[in-house]
Every structure is written in C-alpha cells, then in structure tokens.
Length: 433
Image: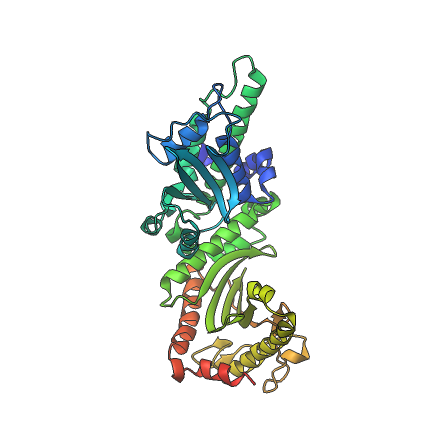
C-alpha cells in the first residue's frame, strides 16, 4: 500500500519525476504555472472544459459560466493571469457584460496569514469574485479565512480530484494518440508529485500540529538521520524546514498576548529553518526599531534590529538617507548595549539575571562593561545579536522551544506595554543622541 512506503522510497519516486526536478527552483510558482497551463488547455471542441470542471469541483457550483471558450478567444471574454497584483492566479471572465473573477493564492510551501489575505482584500476592488486560498491538507484548513471571504481549498482534496477528472477530458482527437498520451502523462506525473509531497509531510507529522509539537526539533537537523539525509539529497529539505518553522511561528503567535505591531514568521536560509519574532519598540515612516528573538536551526538569537523602509527611501533625497541610516544604525547599537548593561535583554537566565556572552569581532560592537564581550551582527550592524547556547538534547520537543520563545517574547511585550513607565522605551529614547 502507498501509505506503507518508507520516506526513502517516496524520495526515490520523487527524484525520478522530472516535474519534481522542474519544481525545485520555485515550488509555489511551479504549481501555479501547472494549474494555469491545464486550465488554458482547450478540449476537442475548442472549449476550456478543464476550467469549467475546476469550477464544479473546486467551487462546488454547477452553474459555472457557460462561455464558449475557444483556443483563440478574445481576452475581453476571459483571461488567466499569473502574479497580478502579487496574487498567484487571477481568472477573469465576462458574464452578461459583467466581469467576474477567481483569485487563487497558492500556499503549497508556506502558511497563509490573516494579515496577508486582508492586504489582498484591500487590493481587490471588484465585487463579483471568488477568493480561494490553496493549502496542502484538509486537516490544517482554517475557519478564519472564511470570515474574511476566502474559501480554503486543498491539494489533498480538491486539486487531486480535479486532476484525476481532467484525465477524462478529450483534449485531442483519437487519431492524435501521441498528444493524448502526453497530456495524460503530464497529469499523472503532477498527481504523483503532489501525492508524494503530501505523504512525506504526513510521515513527518507536518499535517498534525499536536503530533509535530511532540517531536524533538533536533530530529529535523540530525545529520545521522537516514530519512532526512535522503530528503536533503533530493533538495526537498528547504520545503520541510520552512513549513516546520512556519508552524512554530504560527503557534507562537497564537500563544502570545500581543498587539498588531509584532512580526512573527517562518522562513528558510542557509540550509536551516528560521522562526523570527520581531517586537516593535519604535515606528517611524522611514524605519522601524525591533527587539528580536530568532530561532535558526537549533540556535536561539537575542538581538535588536533597525529596518529601513525601502519604498520611502526611493521617495526621499539620498542625502537625507545617507545621514539617517548611520544615525539609526548607531542608535540600534547603543540601544542593544544599554539593554545589556541594564540587564533588560540578552539573558542566559532571566530569573537570575545571567547575561549572554558574545564573540563578535567588531570593536564597534564591543561592550565596555563586559570584558571580551561583543555583539555579532548581520547586514552592516542593522541586526546585532548574541547566541543563547541551549543543549538541544535537553529540549524534549518542539513545544519546549515554543514555550521558551513565548515566555521571553511576552516579557518584552509586557515591558513595552507599560508605556511611559517602560524601562525599554526609556532607554531607546535616551539613545537618540
């Protein structure tokens, strides 16, 4: 049975699927392109039967527009656009002189956020539309999306069903056997890619948050793990680690008593997953100042970061920016040093006020009050940090990492929320000059 296959066997199947190889450059864009290509294929009568089938299966409506779609139809009647207004797929058609739309946001390798979908809602001005958010699993569908007018469809249920039914469409005449076999082969390969992707995720419990939380985070970074070495060999580890860290970020966000100025997200960089928690200290039109917790792989960083608004930079005179960037970067450094000296951040043990030790090489980041102690930095000192050394073997599971990060982040949020009484805000304001 398919479900009894090992991860190694599934990886072998994927590595022999040339569509999987083609998807490695940009997995979500690849899936959007595959769907768009299939929806645009006319049947032997010159009609877009796949598009009509998509409406019936995915939108679960029988009265999908009965338009005479043909191979050379005028774009005034219909169009399928990719990456329009940063939305993955936009299907537009005219019905009784009224333009209607299907918007599809594809989230095969990432987790959609309410904030992102609300931002898309602001861009979508027309009223006659269906908005679809496409995610991998039925088990991870969110009711929250429906509350902001997005229908959550899944690869597991809707797309696989759609693809299997597409094989019954007569895209070519019987005498065009080669073309007929070719399109069915493509669909079969694509279905296999999706099934194998979902099966690996299920075997790693990525489709079940409760089971995932019980797994040691170390498991996903264990170089002696044969299964993970196989996943890495076929270049699928970025997909897995990004999803794991996005789920961690999602759970952290659910457990924090925060406002609307925090940025919590998962990502992948330098062969490791990343969970970022950025807590807003100060916001201006041109830049934002944050206190940072960053879990990259098995390393937990405590830091401060100033992020400049690149859009505003383009609108302003470069002379002002050439002055602003070094000023606020230096302020970020002073801010971090003062937080350290006042024992308000960079803790090894917050209860006992035990501070972290840094091994940065730059003399600029040296802490005068701490001998041989200096911050590490990224991006020209706009992000400076210290690593907290945590024995990953002692962290029993992902839940313990989440609880630690939530505890540390909540401490900072509570301190900032004191307003004029906040020591963190006072230090930041004092660092202006």
